[in-house]
Length: 252
Image (cartoon, rainbow, N blue to C red; front, side, top):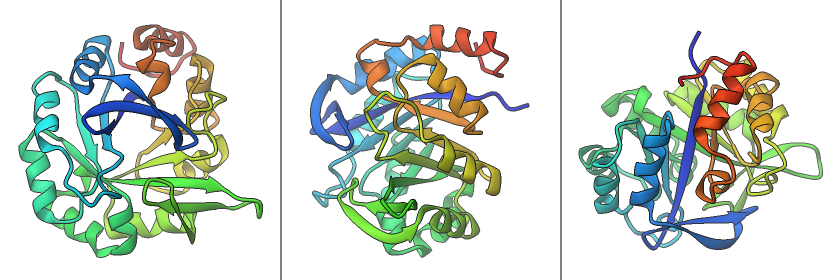
């Protein structure tokens, strides 16, 4: 059985790690290079680095920063933010990224997924979906860092993306993001049960029990969190010991 993965996420703005609640109220959380090195030492299974301003400010992801972080860590490393072209991907992979995450660009031009999968392999192309649960009891896709609503259902978009060659899905619930009240178990399980690719759950992780719930009820392959790790509210070794003691297959 594949082990479940614990993935700290570094949201980067102007070269610093930041964290917000429901995609708003952004505050500083430290130096991404130091945090990346710390998480690798702590036993994180992977790292995700999202340049949250890259898409909106129409600038390229900070490849120099990626390079510096990559030199400090020995675990797989996913980078997202403003990636649109094969050249963008090449630059990031050359600078130490193992996988790239695409979101808005893939939605606006789905051939991006098939092109990237063909040129770099599905295993290194991750689809990030920002999902919001609306009053009609449906989960919708949002773009541009959660600023732009679409009329596309999350389940439909995820399936299309898998058909186009996406290798993994990073699902963030905007309703749960930063609240520390637990992950969005229903939509996570829905994707995990119906799609043949790994699902990374993101948004709402506040304690060790939440991670247990998302691996069992939510059927997630990996769980991503930011603020509880950045502010040292939950240490990765303690989280992994807890999960292991409850029978979750995890790398200790």
